[in-house]
Image (tube, rainbow, N blue to C red; front, side, top):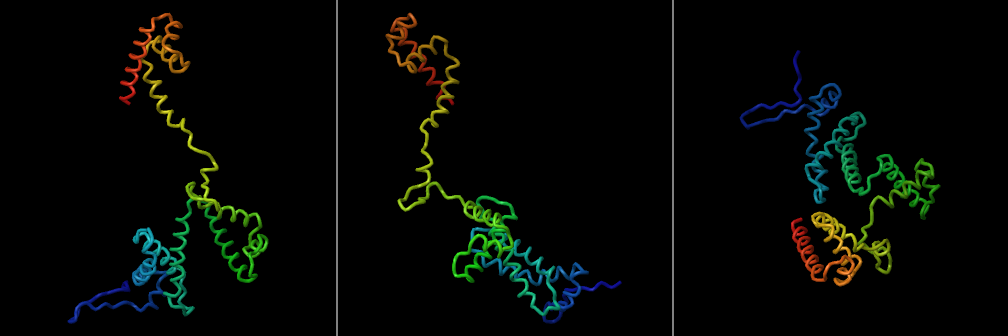
Length: 258
């Protein structure tokens, strides 16, 4: 059985001359012949790339944008109905651009929410915009719910999600007086920096004798003088002084190795 080719090349005196099948034939064969679908994709891929290029200035890889646009192109090729008389480019443009816009909407969510809630947000946004233009005022929650085909609880959930999807930096002033949220929710605890120091000292003290540990506790925790320590443990002040100096030197040597 002879296989029909939708894209052939032949060489003549003027070089390569491309003979492409009529586009009508390609659309007719699209659903039954994968080669026809592939040929249509190849023909319109440059168009999809040109739509993706509109977003080249944003911080996204152009290759990624082309892939997203290609997904839109595949969807457009699958859904296009030639007998409606609409040029394919005109039909495909909203589909490809919609895929690109959806890609950016999904990526700007700093707090991820379920996809269904994202769809409700878009529905509520459209309903709010249409009602605002019609009523010349901000619509109520009930009016938005009716327009969007949702219940009021779903609309209120959308309002909360829209408010909370992009967290505000604690460094950003949020009132007229320039106060930052961190100034109201608390301050840095200076003791946080001591946690590691305490762990290091506790580890270093494992090599000290019980007498050395007791002398250190009496001096630095109970805040006794060397004379008071000597009287407490029954040692001379000179002996206490040597114990303190030796213990501190050993601790300093060990903690400096961490």
